[in-house]
Image (cartoon, rainbow, N blue to C red; front, side, top):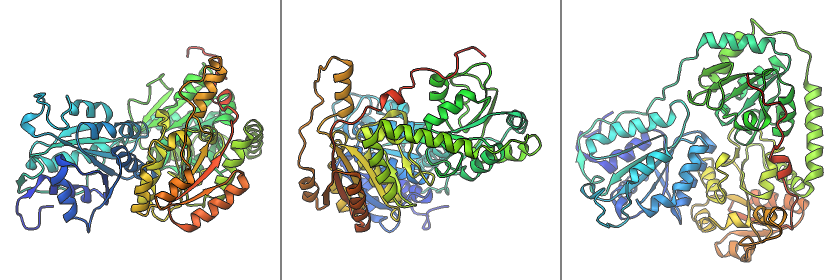
Length: 551
């Protein structure tokens, strides 16, 4: 499409129109001198594009990340160059780990000054080079006539194959420059065609399998119906860990978490891995000659990153699984029902986890009981969060948000706000420890100002609890830099204009959650806790369940 009047428009206006054309209706960010022309364009487009400004650049980037993870749709944030960009870099690398479709928009010093090391405000050596290393694709907008094609390519790259963040920078003096341009419509992602020959081989392997096992990651979030159909046809359990939680409804009889999944891995003869790195399973659980692995992944580099599978299929998860289901009808052997077997295994695991982690398990049960069917839960790097992945039941895709392998302490507060901004009708609950909570505590002001009704559940042990335990247990009680002096969190919440509640038991937490969700406003619930049982004996997976033999 072209500008209706055919008149020249600025680079900033081109960016705004491109965002809107690609479905972005909210921009998270902070203004600053290098981006002033862009924010002027935002002002003039407030009927199409909402601006949520934050109290720190990392807050803006994490909010875009939360919105992207909760919806699976493109989201964007904007920051100034130099320290502003670097402040947001932790969120950008987390978006990369989480395969999130985020556009990072970064200002830049005047174009002719780039790379001259003159010491201009916010100048950074090779900022674009850093962006390239933290994103799937990046570019500099050098002139307005180049902007439409660059924006279009950015969204195409973001959404094609494996979704990941992309990044653009624009110099201060390029934002206001004008040109008469044609503006393309929304970018269409490119997807690999399904290899029907590989599908046929995979269907024969799975059809003949005695103990098939499906393993899913974040790349399977669009394939819930196909996963359920295939699992039932094969009588195959579906294992998730962290990023895969919610790909299949946790209440489905074949949905299993990582610990029972490890037991199933030990006896499986054929593995179907869908949209997952399969790193934990291959490197910790072990692989031997008796195990055949089939992989379906949108990223061709992921197929044989750790080892070459028996069959590798580059495809979108839903498309690949649909083709596999169709082919399986010609090869699938009859199997007796495994529903009772899997239910017994899951029940034994739940009982084991509850026995080993009674306080965490009770608080997690309270959280699950009160979070409604359409609720979104935001995980954090806490002593409750480490345990929660062992048995949390997510009912819907994209309803359990986790920082994946980055383990990004402190991401939760702002990420939850972004999820709420993108999904205003969904209750959003975020857990935090007192250490990580303070990383982004300033964004409570953003929650109140922008009316983002997130419920924050703060488990407070006045320490970086996991670090402190390791210092005590593994380093001869040499405790250093892990005890914390905290504010009165209830007074702190109230000072921001929020409701603050303090409870100490799981039953009381349920009541507080019920009240907080019904209030439909930002609420902080503090839960003072003592030292909690360590999750690491279960989570470190020290002993492979299969012998390490070469195929």
